[in-house]
Length: 414
Figure 1 (tube, one colour):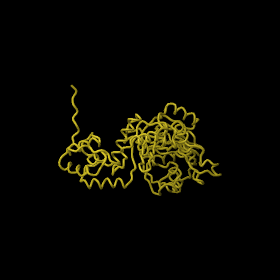
Figure 2 (figure 1 turned 120 degrees about the vertical axis):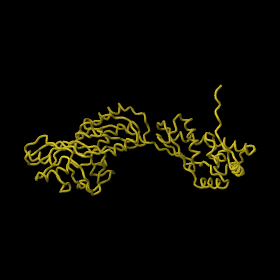
Figure 3 (figure 1 turned 60 degrees about the vertical axis):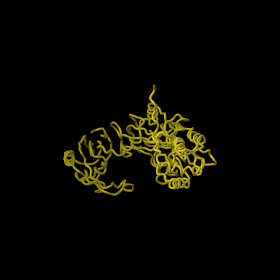
């Protein structure tokens, strides 16, 4: 014989019966009557709690006489709310959801007054019960799973207004990019004159640069998902005129308000390759979660660079200066070129290693490895003394950075 399932425990003792007797006189619907004791009988519905309490009071369950004085019949209109909820997201794909609700503050205050009046300290809020029961019914209707911690879509039922608002949660794609074009910013750069609205300066585009790494990667994904916008999260950023080489820079691309979530990532990688036309390359494209954004933004790996420098200086003197700075701390005040958008302070960084690759005829090339956040151009040129010590100062001649490449981001090292 199959084992019998034990009934949920419900301690109907004297204090509970006393409160139940007071609540019974208020004409509450079974949902609201049972919810006054919602902390008891885990696994029971509120109407089931109400039925047990009426039996314990040795009274027949009373017939409904008009709308409930607490919820005013809100818990009797499940079919309406479920239909409106599912219909609100009919134009998008979703497999996990959560439900919330907005209530009339007077109704919630009335609920607290009733609990005080009947002497119940065991109640469950109308909002919590409604959200839970709506979630169960939406699950049954849609086949999707209730997932309050990781929803793809969030429903907010506005009960006073009689409508359901929908929030489509973002999709996140992770990977690594290489930037091979020295005229390409990492993210969309709004025109400074019109702030993105479009003007004569930007030719009506609203942008300082025609496109960006974000747009070249994001536009195919945006089209495929039917999203509203992208947001790019990179593990740092290189200057516009610097290339990003090696294994590439880790990034997460966020697609906001997507309508389609089943994305063929392999096909997207091909579309991005075609759209980028050799300017950007992407490896390891995959779907990830929001936690990856935090990992990417908080990482501070060391980086390797190749720097082309213009300056008339004997190469032995360059080697001498490099030997002096390797492993030493430098003090960098916020560079002049970014002072308008970053706080003005002095940061301590280290050039971990420095090597002369080649040189001659007023030029030389260096390979460097430095701590995260080191301003390489300013370390070479000096930035008017805002970096101390700097290479120009050590060599005693003016220096200019001719080119800068990021050779590697060492984020995978332990």
